[in-house]
Length: 581
Image 1 (cartoon, one colour):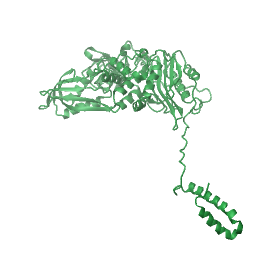
Image 2 (image 1 turned 180 degrees about the vertical axis):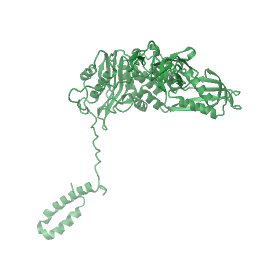
Image 3 (image 1 turned 45 degrees about the vertical axis):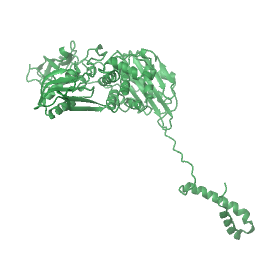
């Protein structure tokens, strides 16, 4: 390196020459040059703003404390998946999204029952057919108001699965606030959907809320809450309260009041004639009990109940309602113009879909299934059109549709058939869908964080890194989605996975533990982030037992009995069928 100012060296040499004599030129010049070079280097390090050229700053190395770069082995993955207890049929496929390589496959081309993993297909199609920012608006139209009277009042359903009794009441408030005192004719328009029970729902005849009918206009997801209140005296009938009340609900109550704290009631709903729902109450109730809540039950026809519930709410607000019928919104004419007098706007499609996927709600999934069919194939939305919409929107995913059958969008019971290869192909296609696919992934439950996975996958290896849909039937346990462990520098892995057990005969939690162990090893094959198992023979905790139900659920056949403290046999609730998640 050379000094860029020679005059500085010569001047310093002359000054020192007075003291060093004739040796100064040979000794001082190299010495001063070296000192100047060192000085320039020090200035460059300690004073970067003096105008000297600087090397670009080096960014800090990204933290990789929670990322493992090592890859799992297929043999170990298979050993884990097939280590579940009892008898079963196991299926599994794992795809590396960065390389496109299938790192694990076990019976990936064989058909299976997917349970709630079916919701991935329904919501993926809806993600293509609808905008995530879109909202669903339920509107009430009216002919001109004359002296507080209208000839026709029309409520039009938009397929909002979140519409509840409070929302319906606010629509009734809007009608009353518009000055309407009398409506000669209330028309309920639910023509956006086909008004039929989703395919496969008839496999089991239960009145459980997860099997509720789906329609373009419904209230509280096509369900009612039933409670039984104390009667006046011994021998009297207890009072049955329906929420929300409507003329679509009939009560068949032969229960009686008795002394003491007896709670031997059975409460159930069944389909009645002309789209009505019959609530059947049997048994006895003690005078010392004020109320027994039987819980939420399905209705026979969602739109029929919602329409009559709306009519009841209008009457409660001083609006006299004449005839109630079901049809389509009539076209406005100069003689009979229509205007919107009340409306309710749902949350965004993203929020609705997040609730659907994170908490595995059947009604929401069936709604998205039919909405996708309606948007792609035209009204009315049906299950058949929903299936066609799935095939059309995912036509480029490389799915062999001959191996896939989607009878409904929720996966209830056994009408649907898929393969793990098809599920992984769907996940891969959505991973390539840009912002739309990223938003869809965010609607899934997150391991150790929320939804149906909030109590699972809590270790550092998996928490916040699993985005998946669970699935459970009496004989099915499933989990499918994404396993993502990526550091700031791009190290780590992104996987799409589909894991299923069919024909299981033991509790679902046993198989969920194996799935969790599988995913933990998938993201942490070295065990770096996985806490060591507890020492000693520690038995795993079982899920807490449910408290005995207080009211009979099905009301079908003879109620089972148990002996109370009095020694008398009293009917109690039969165990519910395992709810699908």
